[in-house]
Image 1 (cartoon, rainbow, N blue to C red):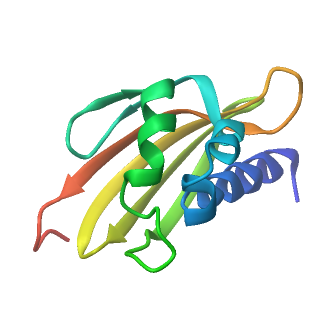
Image 2 (image 1 turned 120 degrees about the horizontal axis):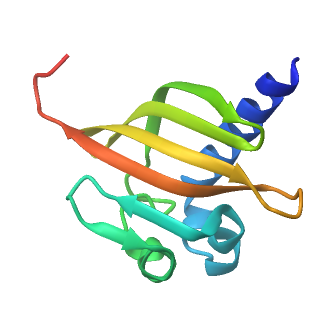
Length: 128
């Protein structure tokens, strides 16, 4: 695997971890995956900051083992620069579809990957 493919694979693995209820309900685990400068524009149009997301994540969709879970599909990634990966994909949760875009950057200390930006756009029912 090339260095770029490795970076994309690592970002994809981190994105998938962030969808796991055990990570979503653990502030410590979520903190490892969200960049301190994190911003999200959610499917509702709400803008989330790092602290707001860490506080709300356990209560958001996908946060319980026995509740609805995110079902990602068609995930692809591109290395924009060394240590910066852009992922795009779709999810379905509880019958609702969204197109998603995430920017992941490697921790400045050469450590793990952290989500720097995320945007979700709802897909109206009946849309291809």
